[in-house]
Image 1 (cartoon, one colour):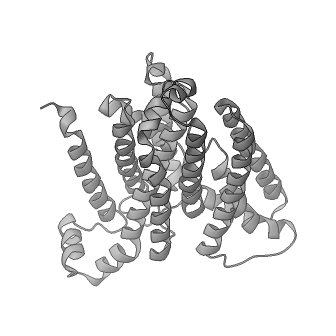
Image 2 (cartoon, one colour):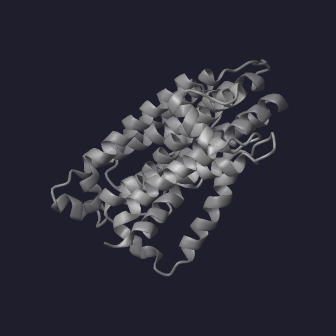
Length: 339
């Protein structure tokens, strides 16, 4: 038995430890034993610990797991379908569409001279989902007309650039308070969701992941190009729709509920390839999901600034972790061998 045989059990164990560490860390340290005992039996030593865990840290940790899984799966799909090692969940512009929906909600009123106050997290999530759906519809229309995957990639990037330009115009004309509100949202947050929103996000991640695992064998064929995949009987046109739909639900839903989270979707698939030393998507998809969940839990734990009342934006932490990984991958001499 080799170490590779035990990699999945080890990774699952690390996920459990990362989950407990995330629940423990914050302005108040809560021992692992108290957390396990409280969650299992419902009997907490301190009422304050029960409130902290059940009302804040537990939903936030579940959001980190859901977002880590969704971003990693969508990033691996993009890298495989476009055969581009630097492709990520945001290349189709769908997440930018979610940002546009939120920008219209937060900035458009200010730009027109109206003052919006008390915007709820439900309104923000709804605006993000509508914006992501709008861009997803546009990308789908282009995919129906365009058959080349590289052309679709370029069109997706252009969608993202156009949407970013609209957001920049809205930012220029909006007031300082609205602009600050949007800037804070764009930094990303895992802890702003209630239990009902957490479960909705979980359902979206489940729906977005389902097409991936139903078509998992087809992604192996796509590694050798669309012509080879077609020769193996893979319907590449159908796979394109599966990829767009899955990425739209995963990346768009996560951005709508949590804001944009950078680098995770690019870096995690490469980490999975390095850990398992495999290009088999039957290994890479579950492996990427596990590593993505672990990494985002750890990034969130670091962002908690243990012992302090303040927290760092999750987007800043993931960028600090993910950017060196991507740079190191670029500098690897055998970087292109993964594709």
